[in-house]
Image (cartoon, rainbow, N blue to C red; front, top):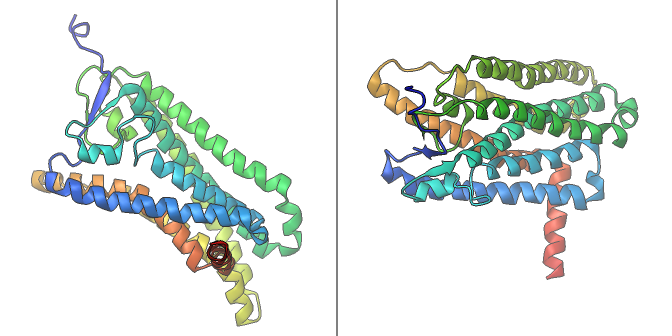
Length: 324
């Protein structure tokens, strides 16, 4: 009888920074600028990997996929998409609401992009392993018939995983509180609002984390052990430097990506109520900037630490200037 009197949730309210109105406009400008940098930087990387024939190799094909993924990942949560109120809109509107279906779409996209990036970084590590440890077989192992399906499989794996997790989440009854203490529909924050047992969801996400976080990290770690071993065997210092330069950008991106995740979920929780409020704000901001920092830094890292990309970008800019 009590359950029948409860109303079903049709929309969610996103708290965001509503408790800190003075910060809202400041962060709106900051996040907008970061988003524009992400679009510009990753857009240029995609262009040069398509237009420059020298970059038509497996490594840059994966890099183009990574740049496109970063744009999709941030676009799933930052701007207004298909009239779904997301982060930027949420900073300026007095009532920050999102429909149940819109929330499900947002969770699916962000979850799929995150899982895909984990797999893609593992694929890129394998590419560097073959290039440095088995250079004579590189063109055979990493042929187009191999690296294209590898990239496609990373997108499919991320999409399937997200579909499973979100399907389990939307089947839960939401009949009580509809306030999400976050900027976006973050799946853990949404699950807390369910008025039913979420143990299956927790187990499913735990298994997914092992597969999409644990396995790629282990694979990348083992790959770089072999890579570093092979580099140290190169007799000349110039040869070692050249070999390491081909994988230093990817290694930097991996460290930032997984390092931020470990920082987010590995730091201790405050037991002090006042400290908990501050930590709650910090957690939301860290989570938000995590979704922006890595996509923003990726093109910068690959541009600064990769001569081929720097040359291709300069050529693209010079051609644009000459055409004008």
